[in-house]
Amino acid sequence: MSSLPLDGIRVIDFTQVMLGPCCTQMLADYGADVIKIEKAKIGDLSRWSVGSDPDGLNNPIFTSLNRNKQSLALDLKQPEAKAAVLALLATADVVVNNFRPGVMERMGFGYEELKKLNKRLIFAVGTGYGLTGPYQHKGGQDTLAQAATGVMRRKSDASHPTSVYSTTLADYSAGMHLVQGILLALLHRDKTGEGQQVAVSLYSSLIAMQMQEGTMHLMRQKELNWSAFPLTGVFDTTDGSLVMVGAFKPNPLQDICQALEIEDLSQKPEHSNFDAQMATRPALQDIFVKAFLGNTTAYWLKRLEDVDILCSEVRSLPEALEDEQTHINKLILEVGETPAGPVRVIGSPIDMSSAEVTIRRRPPTLGQHNDEILASLKRGDAA
Image 1 (cartoon, rainbow, N blue to C red):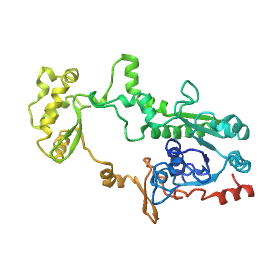
Image 2 (cartoon, one colour):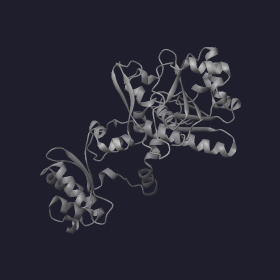
Image 3 (cartoon, rainbow, N blue to C red):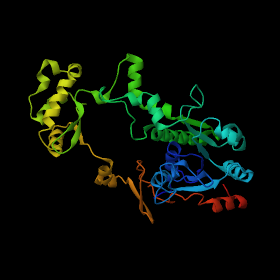
Image 4 (tube, one colour):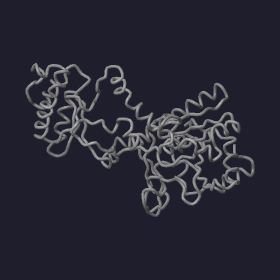
């Protein structure tokens, strides 16, 4: 197996919680040397912001985001600590932060200062709303981004209450956009020799996630809601539930009716095409609900799959984690054990034939690598 693609790339990581750490973990997984700058004594917010844990500051949240990194815990108000970080930045390839605009500048690590120190440095920043504009100084958080961008109001049924989506869509999508930006900047630097600033925001990432819906509104002033299509829905069975997506074929309603062992509703004028089905969606959905209650999930999945209708059992996350496909896709990594038990984390969704993700470094304890990194600076071999 060849070396990982980011071998030799040094990343100085000021990020905390989710947006930034999931970005730098992706870089670390593929070979980057990531040095995580943490506050002395307390460290990354994710080490302690979800309550106590048997593994102390290395709780599952921190562990999920910080494998393959080194921890350098410093009090950056101290001149010697700031000098150590500047020495690292002088020869680094990338610096990543997810502070509000102006915080890095106040610490003495702003882009304008750092590019004088290191013209090849890529300055990557993730914010809540952007580097400029009326919301630039607002604190960014996933739930707030859902609310501000229209995501929270998107529902499969207008009668459902408005609520927070429980998975951090904004943090993860913005983190992956930040990875993309950093990789693009590295390619640009290979051509020009120059670094640059790369910025993403939770706000922009969630707007971009709605590119199809947004474009439909901008061009046609119409609502596009894939989950509210007439032949799509979640349906209870005798022993669970399934999701069905009746789309992407000439006459899906006919095939659904065949699978459900009911009359061919597509032959009726009121259900004969997509526009007619949208107008009669409540009636169609009511027919589907009653039919699916007549047998088991496994029975209906086989019937639907036999006529090539897209469908799936609705499962919990623990059920998905136990699935054979999850393990075949190498989505669970073993990271050893602690007194609290086995350390198991979610792997990379990217499968590269010549660059397999492995655990080179376990998620670090706070300040675990202080002596090693600071000694290297004294020897002058930080590069």
